[in-house]
Image 1: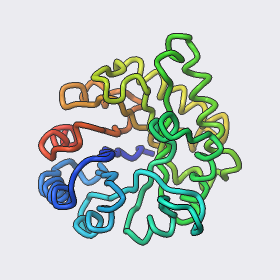
Image 2: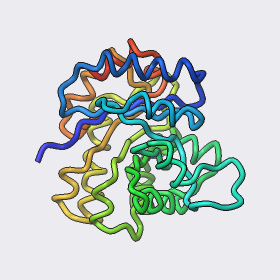
Image 3: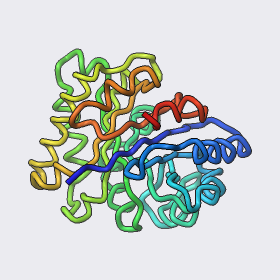
Image 4: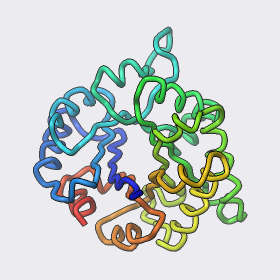
Length: 250
């Protein structure tokens, strides 16, 4: 079975409302890749509903950048799974490196968010990746194995099949550095093996694994041609429609 091709953009804490909606419209108008390719934009939370409304009937899906694991309660500033669904979001980012390393989220937090997303019919995009010092110490595989194993803890095979994984080496996010296609492929292959060990070879063979980390128009082709790289999660280059379209339309 051919794996899904997913090209996602994470806008982080950028854009005004009007710019966000107009960029969504421009992406929809300019997206010419085949019907087998999925386009996803993770918008800032205040704009998610209107961006999702603007994308109705198109090939573009909107996702939320973060989500709490409780349905409701006294959790000031958080966004619940019910709110994510109510905004029309299909996806949610789980375990992004900024959530882990800036806001101190743990593997346990990531696991609870994974299960909450799946419970409410939201497709989780799980982000995993190592710090520069971890790569230099040669413990990349250990770090990612822990992140993957803990994220899928007590998640059934049926539910795990609803997830997407994005490998984002932290040292390559927003730094201008990018893992070579060979480095990325090696890690993607190891992640696929991890899924096989947790579940089975069939699930591992169909789970989409994306690469993220300073992806730009001039390096996308080398990355995407690798066997185990099924798409990308793009940061800065997704903020402008023209630059993102030059990536997603390869």
